Image 1 (cartoon, rainbow, N blue to C red):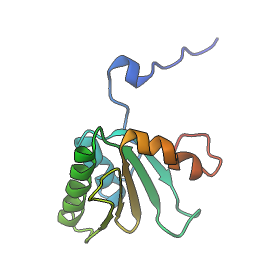
Image 2: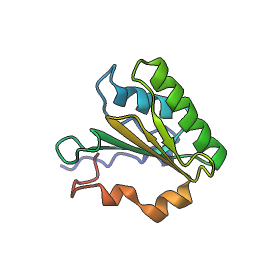
Image 3: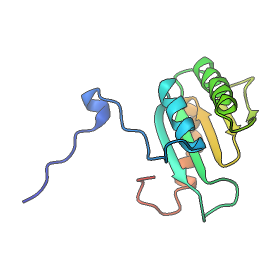
Image 4: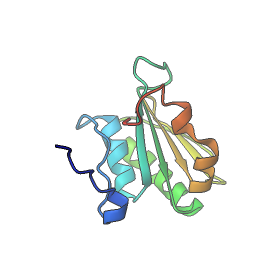
Length: 132
């Protein structure tokens, strides 16, 4: 007997669940902040043991340059308030692609067209089956 396929969250109108993160961590704070700010297509790629740049790479989209910039600025504020220190932000003036470097977590925020052009998920997938 086969199990029926799960409906696509986008087609049912229910939001997709957040990627798994240990509660109280910088990674969890980043994911929750982006979810609270209605980031779209939130993906978390584990890098621990695969790259020395960070433990996690988070990629998300915003609907406009204004939303991308606002998400980046709010995220930086929340990280600082959470006691995780200061972050570096690159790309804010144009806000087509904003990089938020929080140390153990690197966040890429895109407008959808720019995200599909660069396709970082494919570049950093390391041959995983897409369940990052």
